[in-house]
Amino acid sequence: ISSKLPNVPTSIFTVMSKMAAEYNAINLSQGFPNFESDPKLISLVSEAMQEGHNQYAPMPGDLRLREVISNKIRELHHHAYDPNTEITITAGATQAIFTAIAATISRGDEVIVFTPAYDCYEPTVQLFGGKTIAVQLEAPSYSPDWKKVKAAVSNRTKMIIINSPHNPSGMLFSESDMLELEKIALENDILVISDEVYEHIIFDGQVHQSAARFEKLAKRTFITASFGKTFHNTGWKIGYCVAPEALMKEFQKVHQFNVFCVNHPIQKALAIYMENSETYLGLSAFYQKKRDYFLSLLKDSRFKIIPSKSTYFQLLDFSEISNETDITFTERITKEEGLAMIPTSVFNKNKEDFKQIRVCFAKTDKTLEAAAKVLSAL
Ligand code: PMP
Ligand code: GLN
Image (cartoon, rainbow, N blue to C red):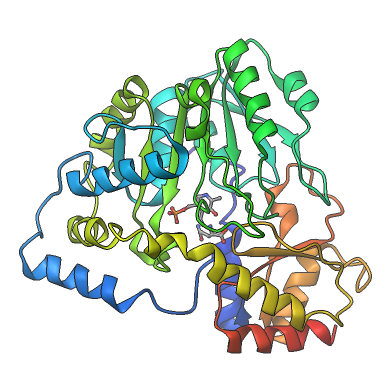
């Protein structure tokens, strides 16, 4: 058959996790914790099943969970989303992003993305006939250059996709970045997807500048988020999307035929669990400790390291260790040294000469110690 996505390879996360299993390597590649979710949350899921919440949830999701999300955003970002009309529970952020793009992007539309970019944006835009225009974030700061963004805008620009906290760099958009984005979106009538899956993993006392905090920006933005990152259960595939009513109406037209609704007992459990805000507000401190421990173990390594500002990823610059491409380097280290990591060139349009690899530090201290031993010996 003629492919709709002829140039799309198998995702790097599948490739590297498969290679890690094949070579019995420590897996710091695909981003997921190797420790368990809170047993209390797991019990709440099984209680919800025993109580009989085993049939379809309402199409937009369990109302109590939507209310909890609305309250959380109001408290943290001072913006009130109506749980009845402006929130949908999704099968992870991936489905939220897919659905928002499906609902808005048509043939010929242009969508600005920042590279390095998470891998699902471009193929999804292409699937609906759109074209991505890449704006490169430059190492080592990975801060956006708004002059480049303005130059990338054309009369076909329908959407800008941002991702802060940023995978893979750990960069955070500042308040002034968000104000620049708001201005460009308003002046050019552009929609925004703000992929905020790492919203609760922010280090060194910084504040997550959610699109919800910016009144005029929020009016044209789909915010997408993921419980998998926040509650250490990426395999549950539950997330959410919030957007103003007019956008959410279009989103739900697609959602109802995409999945209709998602896992009901997990939604019931999350609604109860998240009523205690400590369940997510403690996450930044938890991961900051892991980052600091991991970096202390790497202090004598030959990698050049700028501490990650957010997310559970750390970039390592290997330019003083090897002249190989990042793909050759990561393959060799997986096979010969038993440690899998992610080459970052795959997140970039221009695949030349990236000397940065990404490691996930959402791992037990024991795993981090074993990985650091390998990395320090390179
Ligand atoms: N966006 C980014 C930036 C991610 O890193 C991920 C996944 N790790 C997702 C979206 C997808 O999230 P989910 O697993 O909830 O679909
Ligand atoms: N988002 C995860 C990462 O960046 C992977 C998710 C996936 O495997 N699709 O590693």
